Image (cartoon, rainbow over all chains, first blue to last red; front, side, top):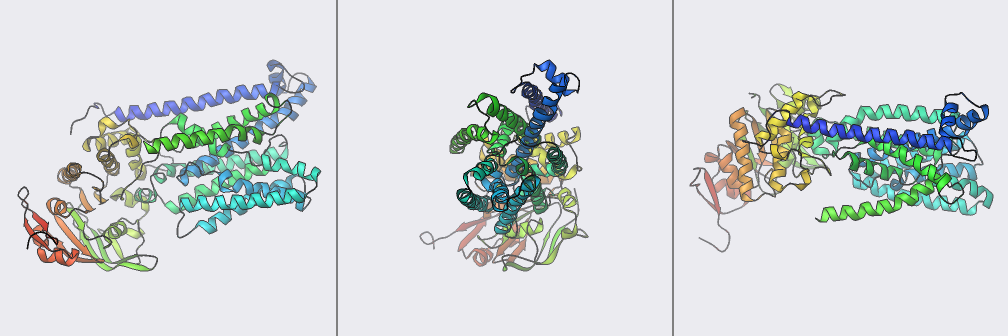
Length: 346
Length: 265
C-alpha cells in the first residue's frame, strides 16, 4: 500500500511534536506559578516590594519581613499549590478511569463527605484542630467506600459509579444542611468554612502532612499512569492489551479518593477545581491522553490565582478560595456542557 | 508467523450463571483465516472473547501451543494474541498515531516510553492498513471505514501472530467490508498471521475463510473448509433458514441464497 508519509521518522516527528507541546504547557504553568507566588508574597496588609519579599523568602533582610513571608504568606501559597495539584490530579484520574468528563469529587459526593465529616466533628462532637481534618478524611473515605459497595457488580461500571456518587452527594448535603440549621449562629459561621473550602489556615505541621501525603500519592499515580492510555479504550481493549483492568481501575480510584480526602481534610471542598482543571489541561495538551501532570499543574495555578483574587481583587474583604472557584467554575462547566453537546451532535 | 494453534478444550462460558456455551472444543488452525458464523445470540462473540481471555471460563481451558492461556501473564498473552473487540470507541481528541501507539503497551516496560523502534512498528502498521496519511488526524473525525482500519492498525502494532476480531465489518458498507476483509487476507498471506473473526455476513465468510465454523445455540454445527461445510442442510440447522447454495461466480465459494416466504419455490 502506498502512502504520502515517507521516512520512518514521520510517526516519531508527530510524537516529538506532541511532547514539545506538553513541555511547553508545563513550562508555562511553572512560570505562571512562580509569578503568582511572588505576587502573593508581596500583597497583603503590609505590602512588600518583590525584591524585599524574595530577600525575606531566603531568610535575609528585615526580621518583620521574614515573619510576614514565612509565617503568614508562604504557607498559604504552598497550601494553595498543593491542594490545587491534589484536586487537579484526582479529577484527571477520576475522569480518565471512569471515562466520564463529569466525574469529579464534587459531583461524586466525596468532597461533600469531607465537609460533612468536618462539620460533624466541629458541631456534633465539639472537636477542633487537626482532629477535624481527620474527620474530613474519614468522611471522604466513607463516601468513597459507600459508592464502591453500591456500585460494584462483578466489576466497576462507570455510569453506575457516577450515579451512585450523585445520590450520595445529595444525601451528604442534606445532613450537612441539617447540622448547620440546628447549630447556633456563631458555631455555624466557623463550620461554614468547611462547606466552602479555604487555604488560609493550613500551616506548620498540617502543611507538612499535606505535602508528604501529596508526594506519596503522586508517586503512586506515577506507577499507575501508564495503564491510563489502554484503559481509556474500554475494558475489553485494555484487557486485550494486557492490562489487569479491575486492579488498574481500583488502584487509580483509590489514589484519586485518597488525594481528594487528603486535600479536603485540610482545605475543605474547593469547588470545581477537580472538575475543571483536567478539562483545561486536556484541551491545552490535546493528545487524547489523561493529562495527569498538566492537570495537577492547572489545578495548582487555578487555586493559587483564585485565592489571590479572593483575598485582594474581589469584594474588598477576604473571600475563601472555594467561593472564587465556584464563581469561575460554574460558568465554565455550563460552557463545557454546551460545546460538548455541539460536538456530539455534529 | 507462528505454527501454534489456539485451542479450546471443553470450554464453558456464560453470564450470571446462565450457560451460553457448554463444553465446546475448537481449534483455530495457525496461519489460516477462520470465520465464525451463526445466528444472533448463538454465543459466537462470547466464544471469541473466551479465547482472548476477555471473558472468564466457567470450565475447560484455552491453550496456545502447550501453554494454558488463563495461566499466562496478561502481558505475555497480549504479545502473542491480539483482539479487536466489537465496536471500540476512541477517547475524545485522540489522534491516529497515538491510538495505534497504544498497541505497543504490552511491549513496553513499567516506565516504558515510546522508542524509535515503537515508532517504526506504528508506521508499518499504519502503512499496511493504508492509514499512514491520517496519522495526525483525530480518530473521531474519520469515516467508519477509516476508523476500523485504524483500530486494526492498533492490533497490528501489537505484533501478535494471532489476531482475533469480533464483527470487524459491522457498520461498514459493502465496499468497505470487502476492503477490510481484503486487508486481513493480505496480512494473512504476506505475514502468515492467523486470523479468526466473528462475521455476520455468511457469504463474505464463505468467500474469505479457509476454515468456517458454524455455530448454533452454543454448539458447533459444522466446521471445516467452506466448500464442504456450507450446505443447505447446515444453513437450515444453524439458522433455521431455507436457502439454496450455489457457486459464487467470482470466487467459486459457496453462496447462500435465502428463500423467504414470498419468492421462489
